Length: 250
Image (cartoon, rainbow, N blue to C red; front, side, top):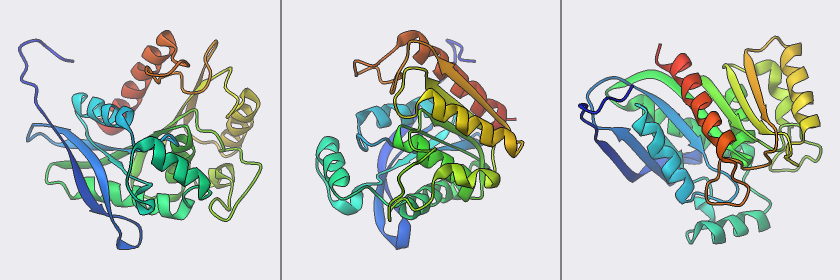
C-alpha cells in the first residue's frame, strides 16, 4: 500500500535481449529503484504492436513493485512506427507461435538473471497477446501466474503454418493459475468461445477465474481508443494486481 512518506523511484529503458534463435531483439524494461527482492512480469504486446500503451502498461507494473519486461515481437520485420510494423506483420501472416514462445521465455530468463529476482514470474497480454499468454502458460515452464485479457483465438477455428495448434488444445498442459478478463460484447473472443474455453478448463480441473464485463467489448482497457469502458477497466486493473500479488508476492 502506497503511503505519502514513501520514497518512489523507477528505472525504465529499452534494452536488448537474446530472443528466438539467439536473435538480438529490443525489450522495454521497467523496475522500481530498490534493492528489495522483486517478482517479475512478462508483457506480450497486442496486434497493434509494441506501442506506447505497452510502455505505460510495463511501467505500471514497476509502480506496483515488479520488474517488468515487454519484448518487441515484431522486430525481425524491421523498425518503424508501431502502426506500420503491425500492418507489415499482418501482411506477412503474423508471427509464428514458436518464435513468440521463445522470445517470451527469453524475457522471463532475463528477469530471472537479475540479482534481486525472487524467481517468481507472471505473464500477461491483451488481444493477440492474450492468446499468446495462454500458450505461454501451457507451454513454458517457470511462470507462476497468467492473465489473459480478451485473447481472441484461444478457441481457434482456422489453423495456419504460423499457428498450427489451437491454444485450447494445450489446456491439459496449463501450468499456472489463470485469470481471464473479457467483454460480453466482444466479437473475438465471443461469449460462446469464452464458455467453450471455460468448459475445457473445468474438464482438466485447472485453477482459473474468469470475469466477464457487461456493456464492454474488445479492448475495454484501452483508454486511448473508443472502446474504453472506465468502470470495467478500473475493476480489471484491480483484479490483475490482486491476482499477481496473490500468486507472485506470497
